[in-house]
Structure formats: structure tokens, C-alpha cells
Image (cartoon, rainbow, N blue to C red; front, side):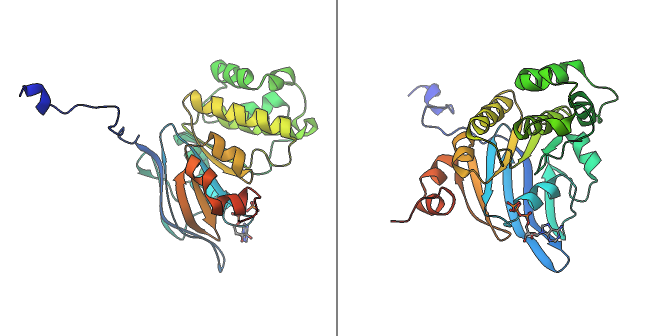
Length: 256
Ligand code: ATP
């Protein structure tokens, strides 16, 4: 026997060690007055992943993203970003740590131009950085064409692009996307999902809240299902796509 047989070695069958966690939610509870919106959420997002968060209306998806961003303070539990506690940290500080948020409903600054909106996204830096603007315009050429247009006059798809571009101007390591496909025509939805894939390929980790479960799971590595404030299922995305419960509840298929 040679010494080489005693050395640890990796074969094709050896699983890769998981990437480090960029985001961890542990026992997260969030309430609106007496109403418990999140009732003990545990979730991990690893560096480089796209993770889909699925659930029906009112399940708590937006509340989860807003809590990660520092817009809600949990009643108990923890949010960790890169290992550090960020629950209770103000939202402007959270942005500065490297979490970008493209909110539900886009919420662009309607009276400002495209360029002014992108400036707002870069406020964690002292000035707008040309390389970040170039990256956003390369991802969204439509925004470059319309840089001087008032954001309120953009189409829904363009406003979605602007909301994502604005979040990217803060150079996030983790991008939170809340319903990016909401209310958009199928062709635009397909473009938006392609761009999310590209943003991820460029190195940004993505946590994606979507009603469009089929599209979300096609680009995601893993998915979590939220039901009335609790995670009821989490699995690799391809398993969720094949799961009859998911197909019936979120992909509009009749049960057998
Ligand atoms: P949707 O897909 O409809 O946006 P969601 O999964 O994002 O739903 P949330 O918006 O997080 O769900 O809402 C979770 C629960 O918290 C719901 O029951 C909702 O009515 C409640 N809720 C959300 N925001 C508030 C608020 N500001 N005040 C009181 N209750 C709220």
C-alpha cells in the first residue's frame, strides 16, 4: 500500500463543502401589534446562491425581506449577515453593510430622473461610482437610453429595472428582490429573470421573493416555502419543482 492511499482526496462523488452562509435567520418572530406575521423562521442563504422564498399572499414574504433590511425589528430571533447580528440595526446601516433591497411595488422616486434614482442608490458611497453606473447600464440598456426621463413616466418593466439598478448601485453582496415579476408582461418577465441570473453570475447572492414560483425555481438553487409565518418546506429548487404539493399549490396544477 502506498502512502497516497492514506491521503484525503476528492473524487467526483465527494460532495463539495457548502459555501459559507451570507445570511442566517434563526427563530425569527415579527409581529404587527397583536398579529404574528413571522412565527419562528429559520433560513440560510449561502454565498453565491439564488434562493427563492415562495408563499401565498400574506404568508410573510415581504415582512421577511423588510426585517432583513432593518425596516422591521423582530420581537425575537436573530438575523445574521456574514456572521454578524443585524437585527435591530437601522436600514441605512444595513445597506452600508452590503444588503441591497428592491422592494415590492418598486417604489422608485417618481419625480426624479432615472439617473437621480440611481444616485440615491449609491448614497452609501460619498459619490456615484462610474463603474457601478456602467454595470447597471450594461445590465439594463433601457435605463441608459432613458437616463434623463422622469421615473414616474417609465413603464412597469422599466421601473422594475430601475428598482433593481438602484439597489445594485450600493454594491450589495446580497440582493433582496421582492416580486420583481409582479404585473409585468411575459416577455418582460423572461428578461427580468435572465438579468437576475446574470447579476448572480457576476457574484451577487440573491434572495428572491416571487409569486411566479415556476420561473423563480428555474433560476434558484434552493427554495423555501412560507405559510402563515412559518417555513413549511425547504429543498433544492429542482426538488420543489417536482414536488406535487408545490405543483398543486404554486404552479397551478390539479392534484392527481
Ligand atoms: P403578499 O404576497 O401579498 O405581498 P406577503 O407574503 O409578502 O404577501 P406580508 O406582506 O409580509 O406577506 O404580510 C404578512 C402578514 O402581515 C399579513 O397577514 C399582513 O396582513 C400582515 N401585515 C403586513 N404588513 C402589515 C402592517 N403594516 N400592519 C399590520 N399587518 C401587516
